[in-house]
Amino acid sequence: MNKFLSLLESPTPLLADGAMGTFLHVHGVEHTHCFDELNLTDPARVADVHRQYIDAGAQIILTNTFGANRYKLGKNGLETRLAEINRAAVELAKRVVSASFKDVLVAGDVGPLGVRIAPYGRVQLHEAREAFAEQVKALVESGVDLIVIETMTDVYETVEAIQAAKSAGTVPVAATMTFTRDDRTLLGDEPAKVARALHEAGADVIGVNCSGGPAQLIRILRQMRQAVPEARFWVKPNAGWPEHVGGRVMYAAAPEYFRDYVLEFWKAGANVIGGCCGTTPEHIAAMRKTLDTASAVSVEPVQVSEVLQASEVSGAESPSELAQKLAAGKFIFAVEMDPPRGLATQKLVAGASLLKEAGADVIDVADSPMARMRMSAWAVCDTIQHRVGIETTLHFPTRGRNLLRVQGDLLAAHALGIRNVFVVMGDPTSIGDYPEAADNYDLVPSGLIKLIKQGFNIGVDHSGTSIGQPTSFYVGSALNLCTPEPETEIKNLKRKLAAGADFFLTQPIYEPAKAKAFLDRFAEAAGAPLDKPALVGILPLVSVKHANFLHNEVPGIIIPEATRARMEKAGERGAAEGVKIAVELIHAIQEWGQGVYIMPQFHRYDLVAEIIEAVKA
Image 1 (tube, rainbow, N blue to C red):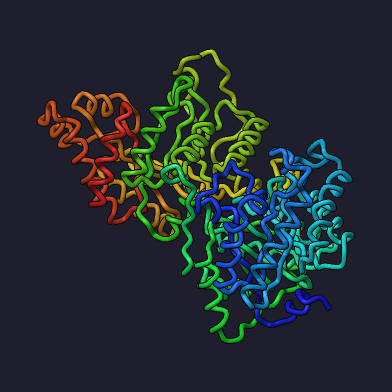
Image 2 (cartoon, rainbow, N blue to C red; image 1 turned 180 degrees about the vertical axis):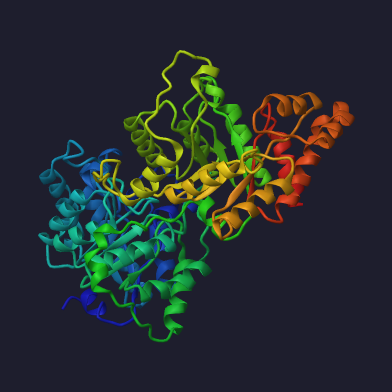
């Protein structure tokens, strides 16, 4: 039996190395440089990486050949040196192993071709297989112990790589794919489908690498093992999701974090464990120490029923950050922002950055407030999430959307990474820029909540047709805590809860005692307290004129006379007094609420930042 396959029979997982590319980059190699060429031009630098991983306790090291195929090398004018580069990489790795006097396996590393494969690209399947076979041939002839096909995103491409490797010799083949944040490949395939495809293609070991950190990969590993319980599994997580800090790509997960997770991977059925992007010899050393000192671990059993349902897993994706924070009991600061009226987003990004720095948990993006023409809200959510790095809640009005547009817009929002949606009726077009515009709708808010929670979130549209995979929306709805018609509001609240609402955003309040009284009245009427979180509306006042306008002309807002008197007395210091009032309101709400929903007036995000900082202090 091949040595690698023999070692897989050991009850203890094998330990592979960590990152090559990101480790080289940290030590001075620019991302624009062809890392594979270093096997010829700077072998000492590559050898040093191998040596450090071997010293850390790795039992398998991967050659520096991730991009050494004809397509990727061709972008650097090196395609004619393909065999030379691959052979040099293997010889280099074997020399380091020999000098270490340790029993370490050398794996020939094969990455994606870097081009789209049919049916999603112009490169035909047979052309892809030829390209893989060309690289694998050079690796096998140079004496690798196994071939590792890794960081693949396309099942079609991966199958071609496996078959090329299997036909090139008798060395074992491991094949792993990478997944996005929603636990699907870039082309939308779920872990169970991937596992079956790789196993049926003939891979000796299958699994997952790159993607996110250990928490995500252990979830994917379990799904793969449920789908193909007889397979052997390879897992190499990133050191968390990458972040851009000071112009550099940083990974947050420390070696100690990997040390804690290595036993969890073992329990979940991993046969080979290592690290991918952002991991270092320190990560590998931490895992080595744990494996060497741990008692025998019992691998989790696979339930037959789980195997049969693996392709229907709907809860794989982690809840949104907002959902997780509320579930953990954290007091939430949500802040509303309006989309710009034109193309410029600089002020929007600057405001969101200020709010994030001040401690806001989520940015709520309104959709055409007051029926005024503005940039689409989901484009703004996407901009804020990617450029500022703070989660958003998309306001999703039903007014002006027929059933086709509602569902198409939901799919678009989910594809952009938006997970929190706040369902509202929306403002009538008669009060806005285009009073003659169509104002029809097919769904009221409770109907849209039901469509999302009982349709999209289980993988079907309004007609019951599959949408390919379930969405994972966290759905909010409106609530008026100081309504003049509490019985009607309680009736509406019950209907929204029955439809599946996850959380509520309320109208602005200025009398916390009255708001709490409504919740007490609901608890009495329903026989139990409201079991969904409510973020209570806070609208900071900036002047007495502003306070009088809101009290007299905005339906649903009642500002006590004492509060208006304070604003009048403050005079030119009205904005500062408004901040004090808001802070006092929030302190009162903290005794019974789950968070606040702050609505800045006149784009005064600086005042909101001041409020959040004051409350947190």
